[in-house]
Each structure stands twice: as structure tokens, then as C-alpha cells.
Amino acid sequence: MKVAGAICASVFTAVRPHIRPGVSTAELDKIITDTIRSQGANPACLNYGDPPFPGAACISINEEVVHGIPSKDRILEDGDIVTIDVVAEKDSYHGDAARTFFCGEVCDEWRELVRVTRECFWKGVAMAQVGKRLGDISHAVQEHAEGHGYGVVRDLSGHGIGRDMHEDPDLLNFGRAGRGIRLEAGLCLALEPMITLGDYHVEMLSDGWTIVTADGSPAAHYENSFAVTDDGPLIFALEPGETAPF
Ligand code: MF3
Ligand code: CO
Image (cartoon, rainbow, N blue to C red):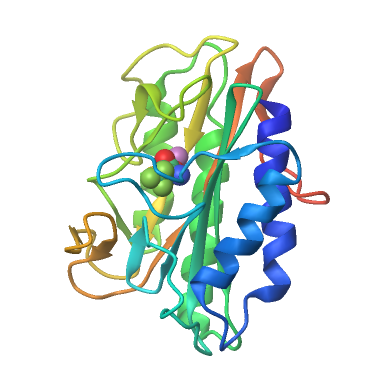
């Protein structure tokens, strides 16, 4: 799980310098594919689901929340926020991680949304302690997002992860503290707050994948896979130099 997570993190390091106005999301997807395969891993999103997902990563821009399909016709523009969500399978284990990047000069309001979404992950994962409950994580995410006046997407969630990309339990980004399963050492999860500037309702586009906000407001996403351990959460998908703020 550590190795698979590190491969996801290496994708962000590789792709970041290419996130510039004029680049297509297909070009980014090519870089992502090469980065994963060169490490002997498999881009698990490719051909996942029904209809089969046609990319190595989900690349979602502005009002696209998650599951955007890479395309040579989708060109990044100055001021866009770009979410890259990647799953690497290495030796039958999965890493899953997402970041929202800035393309060129992004307005302060959107930058703040991205910053707080990242904080939501850390507020949530700080609750991933042996003996606490799943709802403690969910509640911490929701409280932080809504405390800033943002929306918490309800229709999608995080998940268990391991030999499969998606395992039990679902890990919601909203909920009640003190509820849900008790956390045990060894449980591997992916926590992935999807946070909107406006209303939290989402819709799926006719491509069968892309999830957009219903009101057209921008959304941000941040995800890492991690394990619950006796020493607290062990985060699998961090870039070198990216450290837990606790
Ligand atoms: N990475 C996503 C998640 O966080 C799933 C991607 S759907 C896929 O669960 F089709 F692209 F694989
Ligand atoms: Co995930």
C-alpha cells in the first residue's frame, strides 16, 4: 500500500509543471500513464467500470467535481482549477489520491476553496485513530467545510481500499460523530472530500462519468489512501516534502 501510494504521489510531482494554459487533458493523461507504467504499476482507472473509463486518471476542471474524462479537445485555460485523481495498482495493491491544481492565475476565492478542501482531509484523517468511529472522520470533514460556508458533495464518498480499488466501508464526507464502525489497526481507507463553492448538489454528464455541480459552481477534491495504525494514521500518498500538519 505504501508503494502504490508513493506512485500516486509521484504522478503529482511529474504532472504539476505541465499544468499550464494551452495543454490538453489528454496530454496530461499521457504523462500520468507513462509515470505509472515506468514504475511497474498499472493505471487502475483505465477501463474501470461501465462504461469503461477511457483514461489513466480522472481530470476534472472547475465545475467538474470528479471523473472528468481526459480529452485532446479539452484545453486548460488561465484561471482554471484542475483536479487530478489517480489510482495506481502495484503488486495487486492500490493507491488512490487526488489533488486540485491551479492553472495560471487563479482567483483568491477559488484558491481558498482548494486550500480548505485540503484542510478538510487533514481534519478528517486526524480522527482516524484506533477506537474512534468512522463517523468521527466524516463529521470532522463536514464541520470544517460547512464552517467555511462550502458545500459537501453527498452523492460520492471515500472508501476502503486494498486489493480492490473500492472496498467496504464507504467513508462519507458528512455524518455524525460517535457513529459507525469502530476503527481498528490495519484498516486501509481512502478519504476524499469533494467540496463546492456553492450548493452541494451534483449531476452526471451524458458521457456517463463526468460529475458536475448542478449550479455550475467550482469544486475542489483532495484524496489520500492511508492505514489506521496504533500510532495514528499512516498516509500512503504524500509527495516528498508533503507532511502531515499534526
Ligand atoms: N479515483 C476515484 C476514487 O477516488 C475513482 C476513479 S473512477 C475511475 O475512488 F473510473 F476512474 F476509476
Ligand atoms: Co478514491
